[in-house]
Length: 175
Image 1 (spheres, rainbow, N blue to C red):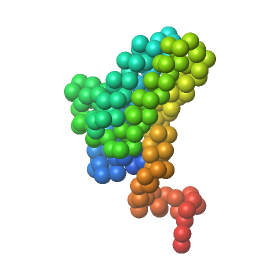
Image 2: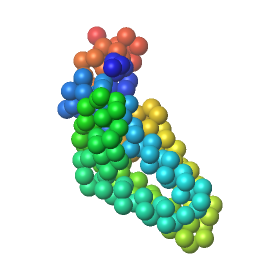
Image 3: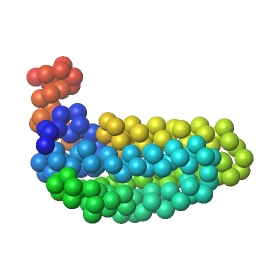
């Protein structure tokens, strides 16, 4: 189990994992990216094939992720992968993560519509940007939709560890 850096811990807080035990987060943090990564891969296939059918199929899963605290692809980890890794179940996703899935649902619908309507360049641009956003969170935990959510509803308070790290780096240090 790898300790979380203050940066990754803050990014997970922004995604809504503020009330999750730090030990649980340290164990499951790499797997919290699985759903986003799987979505990015499936979306990239749909975009590469310019397939409204694949993209519309993905909206089912993204809408489920928006409506539930457990993303459907988290079930793949919870009931399969974790049996092999010996790790615990993933924590439930909060409002920011669910907002990200809702935004992804709308984005998938518009991208599918663009391909269906013959607006190929628009479809490829929208699809590539969606894959990039999902790829970013699946590789770095940096979630742009969660930041949008937090800009609307407020950022989580910084923990003492976050504050001390910022002070050491000279950012936001109040003495």
